[in-house]
Image (cartoon, rainbow, N blue to C red):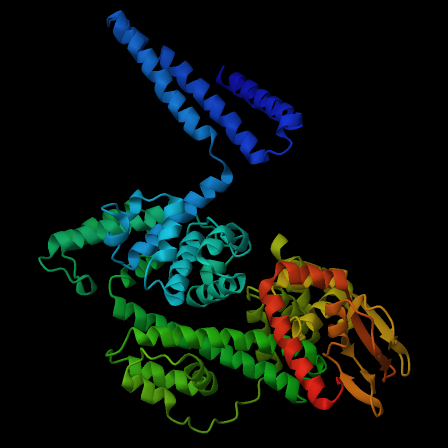
Length: 608
């Protein structure tokens, strides 16, 4: 009986949903909203149907007016719920969900809100009021806004509400309310990935239920500690035999693993936790420094000729590795600001200075870090000892570092690392490629693996056209720091064109319909100036006609190929226009590049 009515409800619901979606009135309605309203009506009907029959043997013992009042009360309450729920939609739910997370992060700042709320609390404010409050709150600086938003993203990732790929879209509404650009969101993700790599691990399943389990154990443990201590010091708590039995019971009740318990206990001592975090970051920085040395040696020495022949791939990896080191150094400096008097702080600062003196100096010069204690600042600003040349890294060690880069969050770095592994060890590449788990968010990695399996050992980069286009786009100043998905979209619309010495790439008067990126060989631009003709030589990695493409004008100069193997990556102007329209950060960066280019042309006399 239960199975039969369940099947009837399922098929009847599908039929009703399809009929509503096909009607003219629902053309402009969101499919999720249609389903929500169907569920709302069904819940209303089932609720009333159930209570009209539930408890009837008892109700019949009551006077008629009680029976009638019960029925009217049930209908009245359910109708109020129906009226309120009918107007809800996915956007409203998402807004309230994010406002709730934002409210919790705002409470951690402990601001004085009495003059703004007139006796109300943060919990009494609706979603719109919370965001309005954040805009008018004095002292809510860019740094604090960044800190609060970072807390929201961390919580959303921990609970599985978003993942690395979906977070940009899901949290877009909050960024608009707080005035946070998309590029800052990407910085937040990178910072969180440095602080906790598991947060961005797509293979780790996260859920709100799991967070509630961990939070429940932590609160029970705190309650036990406070009950047993007059003045609790959670960092030095030593449980008695009875307490140990209770803790074991709690551990079993909440199914706590040893790793989870270590993580929870570390939060009871902020200083100890900060020192532990700093030491962990130092270990990771040391690994990334070794990884950078491996890539640098591969590009500069002759002991690994298979890698030396791929400077574009190595440049991509070096840039990504250096970015990782910058974020770790910044996170370490932030951690040191919380340890002004801790005995281990100076040792951490000395190790940091020794591992990455240049990045430390650059960060101190750029951001100041006024909150560092004088002793730590003195350690960081003193001249670094002369660095000893790193030992030569063997092919097996290089292979190990490249396999580490396969865990990078950027799919382009993963694909590039897999390609270089194929240059060193074809058998290892085959094993890795066959064991890859398909991921819709990193299709370029799977595509690269499939191509490497079908190609002979140590294939040239030209044998993987998609990867080649992505590598050159990434290394270009024009498209540098774009998100992988944006680069992939551009590469799908770009084409590689080949020329020989003397071929005309663009002629005077030609309509510029493509942005031209020189990826191999050389080219010459012939400028018409007042005193005749001036020639400028261009090399791989440079854009040939960006001004004409951005202004949608005709070419006033002639560009000729100056090498027997000159190759150009041609990107349609429509693709560039779409990117400028949808990525304000890219548009701002292009304006800066073009301003410098115009200044250079004026100074050189190309523009009069």
